[in-house]
Length: 498
Image (cartoon, rainbow, N blue to C red; front, side):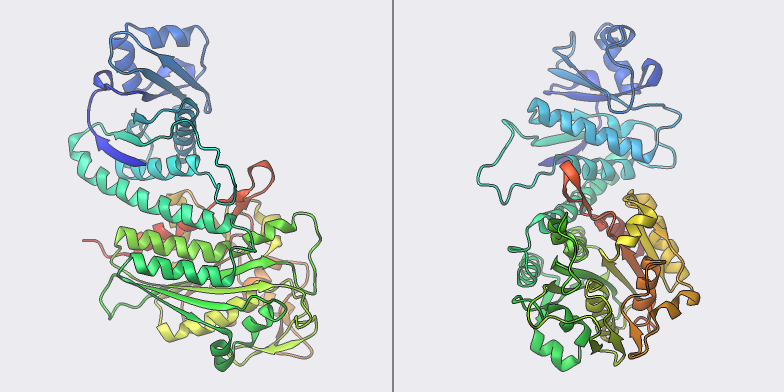
């Protein structure tokens, strides 16, 4: 699918479809007014007849409008103009994309990026238009024998800007949006694959495939023997019950001088989580294939970064294992020694994500990072606390946390900060080891963050708990690709300005 940026009047477009916005109370957007005048007031007449109210979600298609060359006009409800927000903008972009697919339209011209949006420039609106369009049209059919391909698919979307001077920055914004959308789609694809296909070895293969396509990427994969030599007893304790060997995958992108300290992303890659000996209940256990969405988001972010050619140094680390209750599986009460030398009493084998992450967080010290962000579907408690809208954020550095929160707001992929106070640390006390891997029922997301914080003393670190945001359940079951938009926005904000 191609995206283009142009400047031209809507009434002159010889195209299959022109898309314009309609606000509540039949208020026409600027582009809709021009079309209405050219068509002899047909849009105003239809609206006054009550065929459409302008509510967010309203869609109305006009066929063969008079006096203009386009074949159709799609009117998109935008809600209240006074309350027109970032969220509403993304929704109407998605609504228009779905309507194009429903109608089987191959090419269209959209004037939605011209809609006024407080505190957002045209580059932001174009970037979000691309991301929201690709997100709305995403389908996963890799594991189906028969593809339900639409009779026609959208091949080209022209995004209109009002001023010619916006064309150059607009084209750059579109290219950025295409890269981010590709990274998010990759994260979705990996998350949606079942555990029998997407194994730790498969994730390693995908990292290798990315490195082959982008010359600034280098990949290395550590096997269990190598991890054993480094003393990664916590990570290896998770894979003990599985026939699938664990992998520690490193993907490095060098888009900056060698002297630049890297930003490191660490992804939890549990390709299937039964809970181990602390077995999960059967209902919805199939969704535990999504327990590697942190790893998927790292791969997606690295892909987006490489396609955008960001001038930064980025390292992606994926700690990947399968958590199974085999005869060699770790048992509740077992004590393991981490790469840091600290010992952990494993009270619950279903709290395995922090075990693979803690060794990975020790391993990243060798990169002398400027910042480390780990991404993990870590705790069900985060869903109880925050629901499915923001990701949970904990950090040992206030500047890093504020920067991530801002990136989340600007990308529409928001996070909410939880406290990382010393008062919570004693919940991890153990009579037999340096610490336990769980801290009881109360403040489960925070005590998980406290556990990880004990392995991050040598650098600025933030933890994103994406348990509530990485996938949808129910009829819309599937990976969301979050938090790729947040992460890539953060990286764009960190990149030096030319």
